[in-house]
Length: 112
Image (cartoon, rainbow, N blue to C red):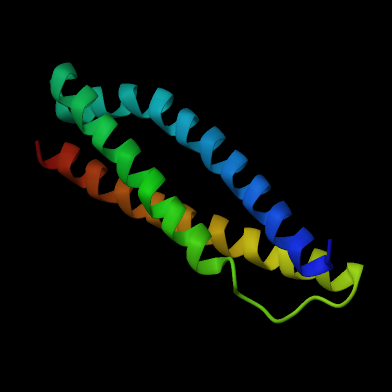
C-alpha cells in the first residue's frame, strides 16, 4: 500500500470514529440543554434528533471534502503532517458550527 492510501485509510478511520464519538456525546448531553432551553421535553427530543442527523451529514460532508486536501505524500513525516492538517481542519469546522448552534439556541432560550 502506498503512503497516500495509508493516509486516506487512516484519515477515514480516525475521522469517522471521532465523528461517531462526538455525535453520541452531543446527542446525550444536548437533550438536557435543549429541554431547559425549549421547556418542552418532547420538542427537545425531536430537535435533538434533527440536530444529530444534521451533525452527521455535515461531518460526512466535511470528511469527504477534506479527504483530498493537501498534496501527495512522499514520506512518513508528510503523512503525519497532512493527516494532522485534515483532522485539525475537521475539528475546527465542526467546533465552530457547534458554537454557532449553541449561540442560537442560547439566545432563543433567553428570549423565551
